[in-house]
Image 1: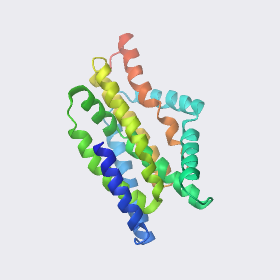
Image 2: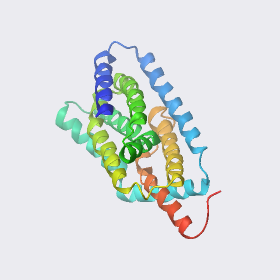
Image 3: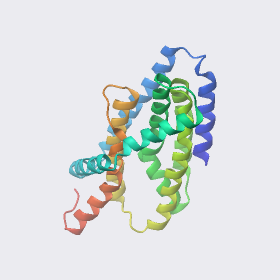
Image 4: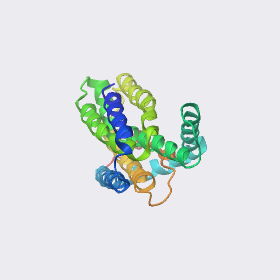
Length: 233
């Protein structure tokens, strides 16, 4: 709820001030966020204990994501929301969908979300989520000023995804090991790279959402390796 509040405040301010901010300023801010996301993704990936686990997770996860058509599902959800609550089409619709997708992915995919939610669910310590909430508040202001009201429609996604992770962590806390958390974070770093390249910096189109299953595949691979007696370095 803290995260939702900061995104709501930041996104609302961004929508209200968006028209008053020069295009070049908004683009520069989003590019800055893209560069930071890129650097943060690299930092997280560098902490992996076994790059092959990350590679296997991304490959298997992307196959599952394409099979389940997660990216298409999110895009269709964004279009439905736009038609339900907004008027207009064409470029405006594409901008709404981009805002919804970018905000949903950036706010929910980050390893800080996973680590913070699990920490909250397991120990009741929400400090990491509080830090993430402040960062997301500033990010939502920048996103909304550039991409519009679609950013605000990421709020239900944050509630369901982040709240669900917290509740799930409380149930499976005995099963999660530090190695699993490390590789999940590394996979999250790779996905953040995809978001930076495809959504924020727009260097080339990437179906970033279809990599999301890799976050679940990573701990399962660690579990399988441990069961086979193959220890991580």
